[in-house]
Every structure is written in structure tokens, then in C-alpha cells.
Length: 422
Image (cartoon, rainbow, N blue to C red; front, top):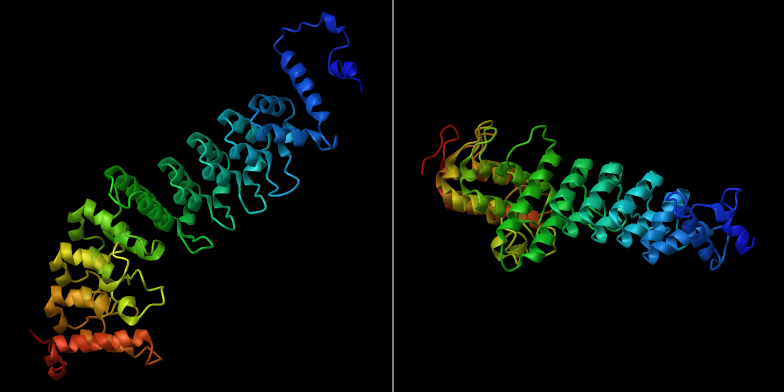
């Protein structure tokens, strides 16, 4: 086809000279026609030329040209790269930070592109978060395709994992959680949950000083994640310290969210919630930042000797803030915090029991109302479950029994029907 015939292919049968060139509906058509022919002459394959031209325009950031092609040839948005990542035109546009109105047009032309993953599992939502796209653009992708928030990449996990790792805005993180609440519980391939990644981002940017606004924003994120993990039906001003402890123990191991929450509201240490004080929740959780590492006995079970001082045990912080709480019984079971801490698999002498005994020595002579055992007997029951005598778990349980008896040796002579008094 000659150039003259190409110029008049899509024109009316009337003469070209009689055409009203100034007419708005005709000018874009002519510009698009000429632009297409210009790139087709330099294309190696006429069969795949239209999609290749669109991708080429996106790479060169020729947004006017892209806008015209999406407007008059919307089917080209379905094209994908033939090699490499097999990314779609939407992936590429977000990578090169295309304007929001153009992204909206591409989504309208090909909505399924929101859920297309490239060879590494990246969706357009992943790309927008990674390359720091406009907040409104990312929110547009979430609202148009909420299901994309649940799609995981092999290397970075869900879009929420990526947003927490790269410090996305509060609105983006909040909308991602709302789109798929269960993702706050899920770790990525490296074993990190969104809360752990959020904490690492916070500490990386606030290693020297704690900015009050950053702390407020971090606690807001924490509140949103706790609500999503517990599936709360009603909104509250803030979560209780009990919920912060349980969330940190389950989904944010190695973080220090609790210390920030307690520092922001110290009076919350004495607030009862469902018949429990925060110290009862802390005693029921085993906190040690080094428990996953292969270290010696002393550092593995002793937070004081741990090389990670920023990860503080909530039990120690609560006893420092409100030591008399160690003498308060749990409403539902009638147990003291010491009884709760000595349940097998929870705490030992160096990981909290020592501090509970120091805060309330009389607890040594109180029987557990559930098992009718003294604290040293509870520790012995825990030691009896260890099959290997040389195991570190057995060693710490034996140390706990010895220290409890050493603190109150008269218990071995006590009548089983009466409780001892110090």
C-alpha cells in the first residue's frame, strides 16, 4: 500500500480537499493513522506490530501517543512482552509511572490485566507499590481489582508485604488490609509477616530518634492489622494491650510494638479486659528474640544477655510499670501470673519467672487452683514432658524447679492440705 493510499484509507469517499481538517473528531484519527504507519515502517514483524508499538511508546514515555492508541485501538492493551518477564502493557506503564488517567483508560480497556502475573508472580499492583507510583494510582488498582491484593509473588509475597517493606502510605496499607484481611497473618517465603516488615521499615528510618508522628502512624497500622487478624466487627479507638501482646506473639515475633504502645499509654497496664490484666496475657506468651537462633544456653533463654536489647519482653515492661499486678488473679481461672507462666512450654526462671517471684514472693506458696500444685510442682510437671535429659528445654525446666525451691525451701515440708505462708 502506497503512502497516498494509506493517507486516505480511513477517510470518507469524498475528496480529501473537501474534508474539514479542523473538525475535532477527525484530527485525532488522522494523527493516529500517521503515527501507526510511521512505526510500522520500523517494525520487524507486521503481524505483531500494533502491540509492539504500544509497548515501545510506553518505554519511551510518549504518553500522547499511548493515549491515542489506547483510545482508538484499545485491543492493543492486551499485548504482552514476548520475552523476559512477559509483562503486560499495564505492568510496563506502571513501571514507567504513566499518568493516572492513562492507567485508568488501560484498566477500562483490559480489566483482566489487574490480575495478570508476570513470570515472577508480580501483578500490576506489585509494580505500582514497588516503583513508588502515585498514591491515587495504587488506590485505583486496589478498588478496581481487590482480588489482586491476595495474589502472592514468589519473592516478595502479597502486595501488603511489599507495601510494608517499602513504607507505603497509610491509606494504601489500610486499603490493602481491607481488600484481603487474612494476609496480615500470612508470612512471605522468607518467613516475615507484614507486621515484621513494617517494624523493620520503622526501625530502619528511626534508628537514632523516635519521631512522634512516625510512632503514631506505626500504631495506627498496628491497630488496623489487629482488627483484621481478630475480625472485629466494630471499630474501636485503639486495641487493648492484651491484643497487642497476643498479636505480637503470633504474627510479629521479634518486634517491639508493645513497648511503643505502653509508652504511649502507661495507664493501660492496669486496665482489665475480659477478666484479665495485660500481665496475664504476657505471662501466657513466651517472648525471646533469640529463641529461633542456635545460641548457647545462657543467651538463648536469658533476654538480659541477649544481643537484641530493642526486642523487650512485655512481661518485664509490665512488671516495671505496675509490679503489684503480679499478685492479681485471673478472673476466669483464679490463677496468678506465676501459675500461668509455668504452664509447660511458656516461661522458665530466666524468661520471666524470676521477675514474677521478685515482684510477688507470696505467689510461691499459692497452689494453682486448676491443678492444686505449687509453682515448683508445676515446673516439675513441665520437666517431665521432656524426653531428652540433655535437651536445653529440660535444663531450663530443671533450673526453674531448683530456683523455686531455693526461694521457698519450706514447701517440701508443707502439708498438702494447707497453703504455706511466707
